[in-house]
Length: 218
Ligand code: G3P
Image 1 (cartoon, rainbow, N blue to C red):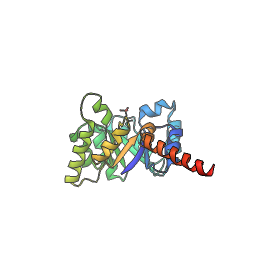
Image 2 (cartoon, rainbow, N blue to C red):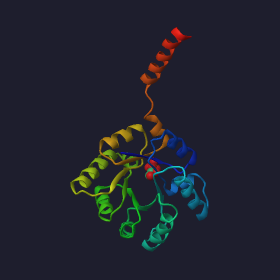
Image 3 (cartoon, rainbow, N blue to C red):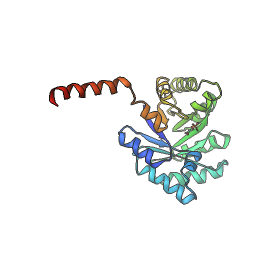
Image 4 (cartoon, protein in one colour):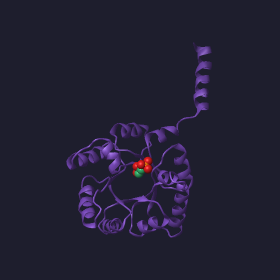
């Protein structure tokens, strides 16, 4: 099971990486825009900056929506750093592009996936990762974790190597539920990762240890 952080914020990436349990980073155009990174050169440098913080895979998403544009952009992104994984939306041109990248040794993350059917096409095209959006399904009263479970079952039955990267994780319980469902990766906001640490009995227990020690040792 791998832990990715879902942000383009370098401080949050550093904080998560300093925990020593981070396996990678996912970004998307909205997360990049949130950091106010303007212009192609700055955007590409930012991806390299992220790669220089973490040791694992870093998903960088194409903006192009047509096959030719995706190919050109994806090749440029992949050339930035060996850790870059080209993120491509699950559309007709996107699936064609994933297949092209597979045939040309470029690793991909097929994103904006909301059904088993889409996940099946991504795996058939050879995607390295597939990103089902759990939170956005929950937002419309659909069980996002159940989708993770279904995709995992299909991939295991047909032995697809594509890794299920649970995305659109909104809180700590999503992490637990997606991993229980068999996801290979959960890409999470920092708050959800830090939420895994929280337990009142740990805090109370530590306080008691220290108080008992102090009673005797001052
Ligand atoms: O990586 C996809 C993720 O960033 C989407 O999350 O909360 O915008 O659905 P959210």
